Length: 83
Image (cartoon, rainbow, N blue to C red; front, side, top):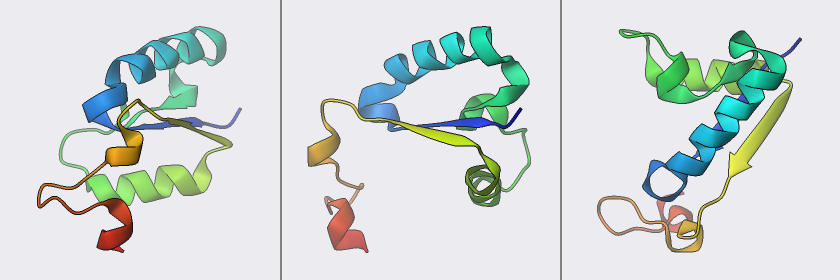
């Protein structure tokens, strides 16, 4: 079985993503669910591991929290301004 990748923003969706992860693990098993800090081992290149996991997943679930539309980086830029 392929991996389910759970994508979320820690600022506003961490608790919902965590509950979703728990339910997915109950259904598909722990090795079939990928959720960043819970899955990536210490010392591994975080960015590369995320890219590899997305490239190999069978399904990606994006958890969108209530503050998603107003997302900004540390300098106050919104996502479309960063690109």
